[in-house]
Image (cartoon, rainbow, N blue to C red; front, side, top):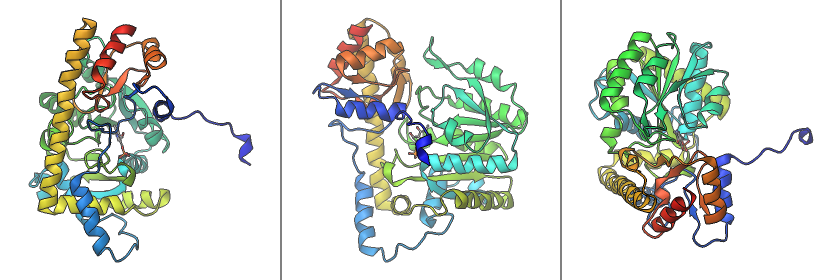
Length: 395
Ligand SMILES: Cc1ncc(COP(=O)(O)O)c(C=O)c1O
């Protein structure tokens, strides 16, 4: 049967990472996939997650299915992590959360429920956005529109362009926003800009859908959640796709949640029932291991403190790498790379042409996405000089 189908090319980003792994050059640098790496190029297991895992292996007595909404500690913990302990929406009990297989699973489940509620809704995506948004959300049959977001000339958010484009959104359309650490550009909305977008969302009757996959990796757990918290406080309905792949290092464990704040408890519960039904028809039951570990880390004070400290150190290191990258690139090329410091999280566009990106790969074994998006976490003290020299050579 399947011989009638054609062989598909590798995913553009994952394919590049595989090509880098196969490259024999000892100086090669992998700046492709959005995975955190420490100074030795490793993606570590958080100490708190390791300890939770040890405790779990002692006490786990069953592998029976979790409840459909997921692990109880996790789904409560993720609401509080996103919104803060005493957010008014939590106090009003108008927030529900359903565990999902990673942020991707949460985006897909969210899209399924949106499609059931408003099949003709258009989903407004930032230009650019994370490419996987399109198949994840588009596969339920929703259509897209784009709003201006990143201006390559200024290396910053084109906020006037964003507002102007969103003025064309129709009531009931979905506004997809990156909660923090925008992927791919690293340029985030300021608190004032979040406030203005919240006002516009209310005025135009849009449904905000916030994808937050890097909370705690931009500025801090609380600051990175500003947009989620502000919108949830000021709008009747907000949908959030949360991931703990990056901020708990649980990538392969597929740990995330779709979190909905509604007008009242009843609407929030309606959403939850729809989300579990949507999940049932795609993958049926949520995966347990990562969510149980995350639930332990979120609910146990000692594990929680340890995790917060390690995450804060990771965040500080990423911001330090941004400073180092700016210094080295600016010195080697004579050009201004200070924009890298003003961005958040793991990503930045270096502003190179596709041809320059190809030369970096072919002549220097420096791998980045064709748009010149780099994963800042792939830089370290040992490779930054080589990287700066290579970039200077292709410029
Ligand atoms: C913008 C964005 N959203 C969501 C995700 C979801 O990640 P996961 O499904 O691995 O939790 C990612 C991961 O790279 C991402 O970059």
